[in-house]
Image 1 (cartoon, rainbow, N blue to C red):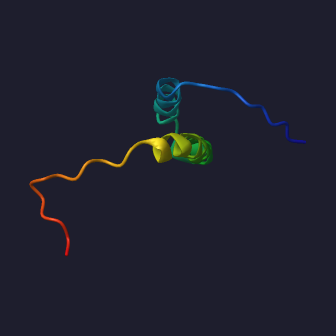
Image 2 (cartoon, one colour):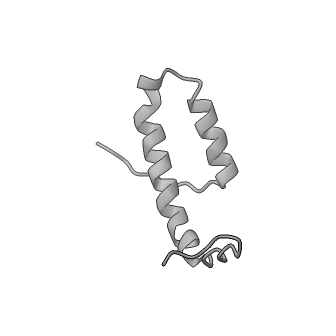
Length: 64
């Protein structure tokens, strides 16, 4: 039986958790690290989509 729990952490807290997990043998934590990263990317996707596009660099010629 699986029980799903939702918790909230700041990006800094999640980075600390990932750093702690990195101290463990990879085979023990690989799946958990992958899951945390995918959930974090999904959570940040709406934020990134709302960010304005970076301004074009005037020193870089535009593609024709």
